[in-house]
Image (tube, rainbow, N blue to C red; front, side, top):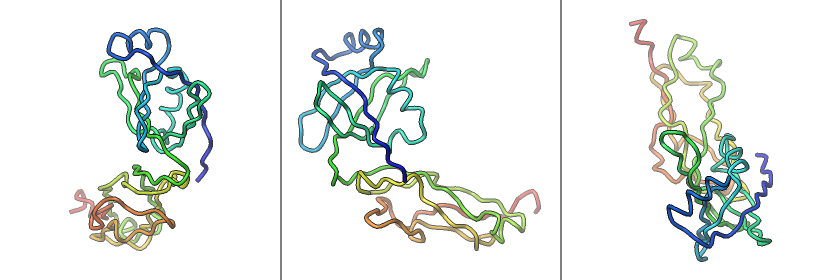
Length: 191
């Protein structure tokens, strides 16, 4: 895991509401809110170019950012964002305020390894992915890039469940452990 420190400058928004948010967007900023950790929510404005560039990276919602809000440094994790349904332009971002020892719930992608060693796939089976992401509870400074799932020994009809996976120390699944991650199924065109 390569946790880089991303710093973005922001300003406190004195005015909130639809009209003021539209004005912000026209002037190259995006409205956002910082909340959490028993502190009052803070309405801020960010440069739209900077936050849009971060949004289009693979790990936007799992990367800790440092917001410089008028010389106050706040560590945050992006939790939600809204896009315009027509233009796909960024409309708003919600950030969760975190501290170094905070535990956060995040969606982490699943990465399958050893597909070429799977007996089921060699026999013409197909990997049927049920869960592309897993909800994990982990320390904010130890968010993994992905969770590797080894399917090397699977045959046709075999499944991998959440309970079959091993997680790094301090990281645990939020979901029910009986959830199926993937199965190897027979190719129906061969039947």
